[in-house]
Length: 115
Length: 114
Image (cartoon, rainbow over all chains, first blue to last red; front, side, top):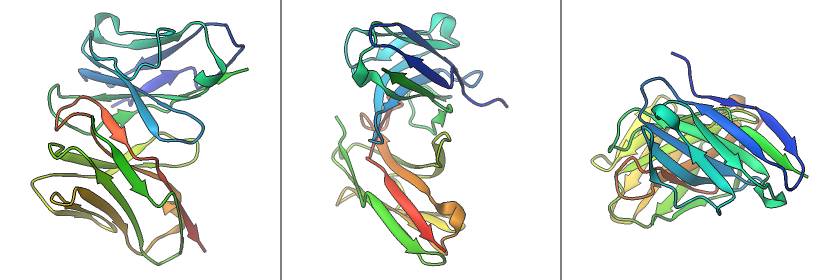
């Protein structure tokens, strides 16, 4: 089966611009997560979807970040306007079973550089 | 919420020797503990996980041990090989045992010296 895919793999934007990251989870996976790794630090949770519903967005840094999962399939994460501290690698992960801790399958990540 | 501490941040071992990475967690309700391996420029991949109803799990050269009383778990890699070089992350559920997302440790950069 196809794994989790993310687009783009790399994005370089200027401070104040807008960027939209996309994640396609494994087909049939209800859970979709966004994480971020900044400057070689730990992988930090941003938010969690169950199907099309936001289950928990307490990890989102501020209101410049907006995530959507229309129709419960792919998800987008928009940063508007981008700031220098938003640079990092944004990972998406999915898992199949709602309500049960299970292996999360990670995408390859999008490396965002804000200059 | 869960807090996960991981040590050491860097570990260098001779090829063929064993490597041990340790993590502690804070939420006694946590019941699922995965370990992820991230090679340079690649995605994190699950290498082994353990649930709180067992104390140890092995998969070839990799093992994980769990001490629920002390709230710590460890990754053991025996007969290390060059391809084991990577960053390893431990994790625990953000809330108990549900599928609410993971809290990760800060990672251990494992270097296998030839």
